Length: 209
Image (cartoon, rainbow, N blue to C red; front, side, top):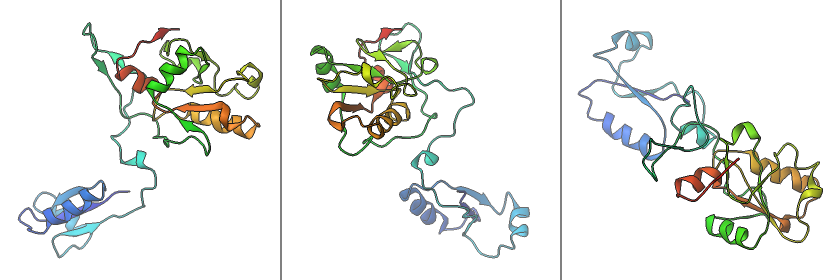
């Protein structure tokens, strides 16, 4: 969607219109008649301000985000030699729901930590080329595209936590949906939506792959 406010620089109503759009989280741009008279001529604009070019309704919150970078990285990276400082790319992927599927519980870092201390399985559902060569300690990598055919490798006595690269990565939520469709009981599945993004940005230890 593209919203354009066409106005004069001295228009007293333009700031009011901008506040309405900002409150609705709607992206827009302002075109001033003093700077772009050809735009006003082209659209036969006689009044200020005017709201133009409403092309489509945004349905995905990801469309409201900062534009995707040409080169992105899925895993937060260390900044120089400073401990505890990481660089995060906020532009890639598509924001995932906090719930991967009905009846599947979403967990946080404390639950992942306690799960690991119990010796219960934590499944890294990422494809190797998206892992950045790091993972959560003690996790087992089974790419989401292989999980259904490798269901017999999952623990039948204890639930497994599934994770990927974080809130904007669909790999683990896709894996969970596929497992449920294949008949895996929902009570054997837990979803760590935070993934490697939250794990690393919270300063938790990682394991090299």
